Image (cartoon, rainbow, N blue to C red; front, side, top):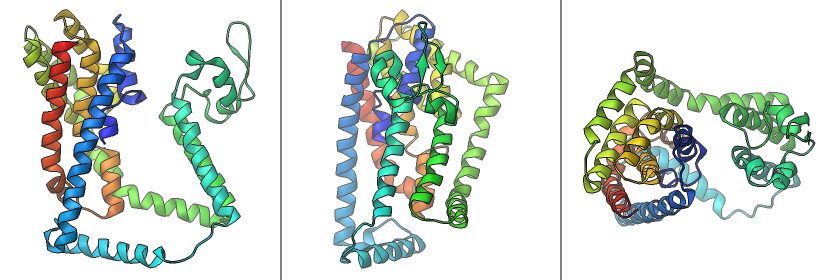
Length: 342
């Protein structure tokens, strides 16, 4: 979560925000974004490590101090018992298991590269990952590479649809490498989907509000009203108030890329008009929506993790609330200092 909060190259947050600003004629210094993002990431990650380890130390000393319910504690004990029984077993990876791990790692390497515009950075590297592609003098693909044939787009131009296609195909391939039968692959896939269905329903219901706001234009109305309220403020007040605005809007527009597309053409020019750095505004957006995604029920990462860990959302909120408040305050301070200095 802190990695997303202090994003530097996240295509769905920072990338979308920078693209939105470029679309309205505002050039962005990526060095400032990377530097400020790194500061946010390091500080918030350190805070989170201390918080988690302090809680773990307390529960280790007194098991009764856990915030888990009796049922959650029972599930945790069962999972821990199974894991503990496996610890002392001498296990050697089979050839198939090694193959699965290699394919799994390869899947994520290609997925990460798929989102990076390699052709704009280094054509040689792009050609390496998109083997088979042949381009004419104007840069148009005469022969499609493997990525375009499988997903519809070449490496470097991927988004959700292409990544989903890639994961689906690799899941089948990993099943084959692992020696699973067709029936086992299908049953495993269904079992995994079943674990996530409750999360999907919660997220779909929670995001209904963003659909209503987009269709009625209420999102832009709220955003414009907030931007007008921020006009004329000093940097010391502008930065934390902008953080609060994005904090609130994150509940109404849970999509990071959607938020960037809608808000940055309004908030970016406002920051420039007032003499503030548009790069800081990008990180205000990233930090605020990053904090909200640590606990909002529209976050697939949080809700999915809780479902798999068999932990109630209310229990998680009770555990993380102090940290979330602390992270919000620290982020607001760092961004305010950046707004005044940059």
